[in-house]
Image 1 (tube, rainbow, N blue to C red):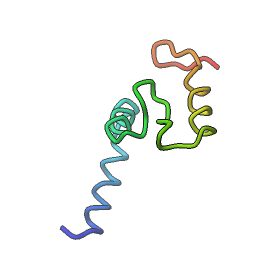
Image 2 (image 1 turned 60 degrees about the horizontal axis):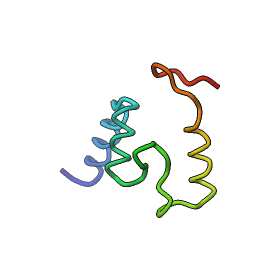
Image 3 (image 1 turned 90 degrees about the horizontal axis):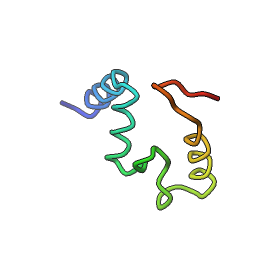
Length: 66
């Protein structure tokens, strides 16, 4: 399998992921912390603060109340 085929396969698999699978994938990759916010050691303070503010919204049964 060449690189182009691997990239195509990876993109196709990414499209099939559920939001929960995406979050777990990003947590395993050390991009998101356990709360779903960007990790401070890899991202700017501004980016981390924005992700924390976004995650501060109340989530009930998968529905985000704004």
